[in-house]
Length: 380
Image (tube, rainbow, N blue to C red; front, side, top):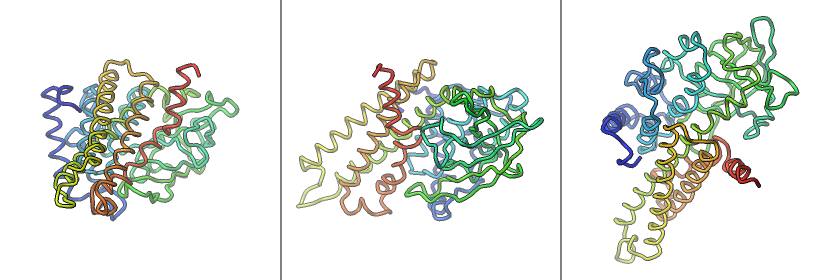
């Protein structure tokens, strides 16, 4: 975020996060990529520093600060070093609002202390093999049997799926009711019938934990129902704007990092006896990227301020998400091109960023769905 948007407390937090990232993530991330999974202990180390549950009340071990700038700064510092295997943003930005806004007092006492300490890693399971952005097509079902729900189905592309100790599962509890038939159930690690399939092999983000999840007659206590039965679609709609804003902020930070690396490369790399950045075409490419990034950064920073003020709606979040991730996609493509042959080498940071971040226009709702949301708001 721009320095003008930050207080001294934010800057101190940023410096602390930067130190944590350099000390606890950078030396190990390449090994985690080769292993295909980050070390579980990094979650506990983050928890000790208060990097998990930033907005969770202090009584549960959280930071007690409702200011999304802190979460954005955490994501930006992780992105600055290209550490795409770290799943803190999903935990903090996506799952936390469900637990804070929907959990009962008893559920909060059970789950939030571990959430903040890093002893409980969380995930949210919406996507299915046959249902992505179309949540009304969800086939995972749960029927009530005494004091339990019996959960059946499968989910895929689930971030933090292997490490997750708590999974918020979207399931159909009222057949034939469409969007009004969905509920949220919290599945815990050791529940019989809950299993994990493959850790999925992606074209990028090799260290990120993305998995298939299976539910074979899992008996989920009714005490693990999150929110109101049949109201999951509304709960999701209420929390998706923050998720999409977080993706937008992450995308801008990734693009800014790649642009800075490319600008330095163009100043130092020579061709035909002069730096490649002095050629008019390259200079124009750099000028266009700098401008697009400034515009995207301005909009995203404003959206963060609006979110903090409680004014960010679904349409504004959709605009931020699709625009920022589309700018990111274009910038990363041009950064690879300006690096020439080195841009195609995995050892080059922009090459890794190119594949690692290609997912941003896809997850959190595809950019095509974002345009649908915006278009419908226009009455067309």
